Image 1 (cartoon, rainbow, N blue to C red):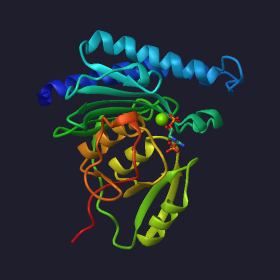
Image 2: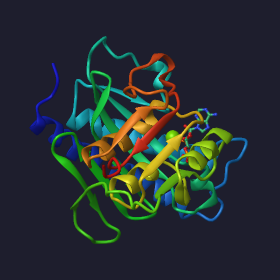
Image 3: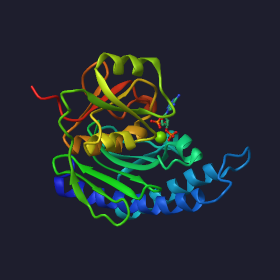
Image 4: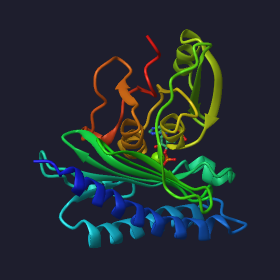
Amino acid sequence: MGFSPGERAALADAFTSAAEAAAAGILSVYGVADSRPKADGSPLTEADLAAHDAIVAALAQRCPGIAVVSEEDAAATAVPPGAAFILVDPLDGTREFLSRNGEFTVNIALVEAGRPVAGVVLAPALGCAWLGVLGAGARKRGPGSAPWRPISVRRPDPAGIVAVASRSHRDAATDAFLAAHGVAGLRAVGSSLKFCLVAEGEADVYPRFGPTMEWDTAAGQAVLEAAGGSVLAAEGGPFAYGKEGWRNGPFIAWGAPPAA
Ligand SMILES: Nc1ncnc2c1ncn2[C@@H]1O[C@H](COP(=O)(O)O)[C@@H](OP(=O)(O)O)[C@H]1O
Ligand SMILES: [Mg+2]
């Protein structure tokens, strides 16, 4: 049995608090001049693990009894068959973190029956957060002190759609998709921020043919679908979660369908 809409919303609030705790630790390392990977105990690894620890501790307090699958310990976590679980990427956008362009995120999502139904994406360096609860809409906070406000996908401009794609992991299949869909503009962006840009109506589509893991996409998908968009497997059909090894196939994340 799934959670009620009210329970999902309460969990999303708990995810926001957990992500904020992680962000504080990440930013304390991000601000250090030599936060570059090193062979032994790199600051990046410390940021990842500190964020993971902060999230797991916060979730244990606020949402006990729900299995937590995090990038940092996915192999060690068992989810009871059919049970809802929480998917966590404590620091998505490793390369962007290293290059210090701000395009990295903390991601926490609730998965029920193979679908992300609530999620939070928080971008520590940008000072923004996005939250989505399926059936209850999506909202954004920030940058700075800008309060939570509703967001939704936009209708594409008939003159051509705007796409977002990975900054660090582009491939030929993505380029072929862009060429085939009359893309009028393309923005290269790191991490799950791409889902958020589509969700808030800054772009129309995010095609992804290269590899991702379930924790890279679950929270972004929850935000996007709560904002009126959809994520489909590239070959068609739903984009399912809880797969063996947590590895995703290719997908297309859409905003609103084009006007008929
Ligand atoms: N070869 C590969 N196998 C699995 N996942 C990959 C991958 N190359 C990139 N990714 C995933 O893509 C994410 C980055 O997305 P993007 O390219 O959109 O910024 C990475 O998240 P992390 O940065 O958390 O490792 C990583 O999980
Ligand atoms: Mg990731």
